[in-house]
Length: 248
Ligand SMILES: [Zn+2]
Image (tube, rainbow, N blue to C red; front, side, top):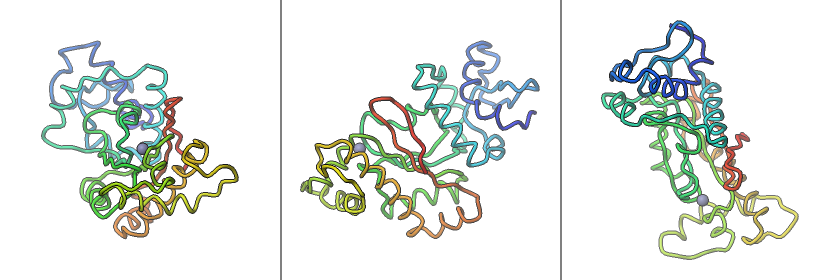
């Protein structure tokens, strides 16, 4: 067994490639681990042992590399059936991601992640409430995830709605959670929803404020962060370029 974390960062990519090459040999649901040469020979989902060896920073690096593969059109040849079978009896996700419901920003797809890799919470404008915090606390404290990633995106409709004071049923209360970010955004130009520069600046501020909110409202997660058991990070996904920018 190699304990080189770099080789593990490629677990999805290499393993799925390897899976295709050697077909039935690795089709067993048992995870086979890492070959002596540093190449993964496993066909399934992330294992407890693999996650144990990864630091929060290495997990974030894995996500960055996955997004690079996505942008280059070089995604791993996902064998979702093998991942489904390998993870059916247990899951060991490396991270929990809070992102927007926008149909163009599916976190797992744009970071080339597979079944069992991450917990995912999606809500318009990627804001945290008590239910989201409870989900994150489960993901990290109970299920062992090491990264909390809050990911906003460009041209976000929820952000535009908050800027425009949109009113609609239950959406009104949701947008109220984003409005503090509108007010807190320092921006010299046109502060309207038709100015995408401003919209994206608010989205970025909203990610920062959501992270601050998580620390303030969840002593469980704040304690895990203080002991370096987890890392809280923020990112923006660019709909035009396909790039995920990790800025916190
Ligand atoms: Zn959005």
